[in-house]
Image 1 (tube, rainbow, N blue to C red):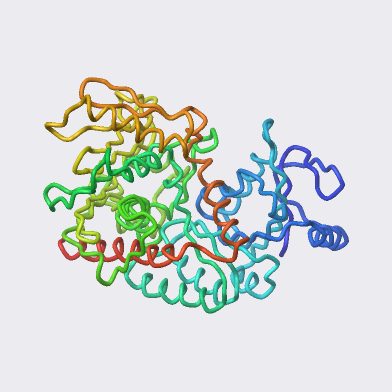
Image 2: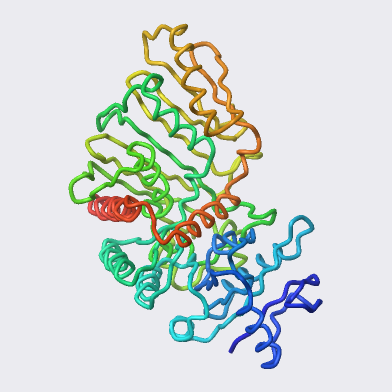
Length: 475
């Protein structure tokens, strides 16, 4: 059955103002024909479809409008909490006081939702962000049908998924469509600046090779099950805590970290996972949640049956959400790790630590209490460096960075320089979804992606899925 969802406050639908409740409403055949005709008459070349949006990232893609994208979005999903929460978020964006969106959601919730989407194909671009157990299969089916896919991470959570992902990329190339993942962290300003300063040989030198005990690159990400999204407490689906459906932390959030290692250490270079990636070690461990904590984030009174096998002593739910990977990339030693806690300290949120070690300086991102839980980039010259000479070199290098990011400054404190970017660059994690989408739309408009993107996506998911395999062998 098809339904059209309208937000709680009056919004413009075609040329008529309608006001209704938060409930999804039926649309008559007459009105539906009018809506489809109007949609066909728009100038937008991209028509969105959203498939099984079980994760809030699917809605964040629609937090903004895009000039070349039709406002009518076709959604295919099973009926239930996931689709209801997704539509509520879209409604909030449509109803907000500042820069409201104008999305119209045409929703199909039959059990054959995937087949229906592939059959009818009312759009040419599919957004996927939800339960990861079948996501790789969904992607393969979509590109086989000649559809472009923008997928949230992770694209693969097992080595079996990785094998299917390789087939999906081959199919996308054959059918001349684009398969791309949502790497929001490339748009975080301190990470972008860390990358730019690392490309200044007079300041950074060259990237060290490091060792397994002392890697040249280390990245650590701390996340929280309880958090706020778009100003409201996030309600997570129960399956999010099942690693068979969500994926372990070592194949989930670490996707971003592995991507950043590749993107910063070897910018715009193609990586061949068959010879450039060598795993050294990997480990994983559980975060344990109380029944009260689980209820707080899911609003469920008890664990569903599929989670009961993960309940340990004292009714605690054990989730393998933490992981660490030590590996070599083109001979450079790197370490990435992800940690999940229940809730952040007061005033804090998800945090990131990163260090790139150069022969002339280290580039360090910290986001702790001292930084008011906001990421800050520091430049630390190598031991024995003439600081006065380094400062002059840094001034010259800064001009190169400022040509890309006007307004960026550096300030010396002791033997370390702090890099400061104007507030306009600190637009927040949620805004990065729009930036990724805009980049993907540019790829679609030009008909091509950079040549290194696909092989590097494969390298990334090879690294994470093989690391999971290694971590499980050590149990």
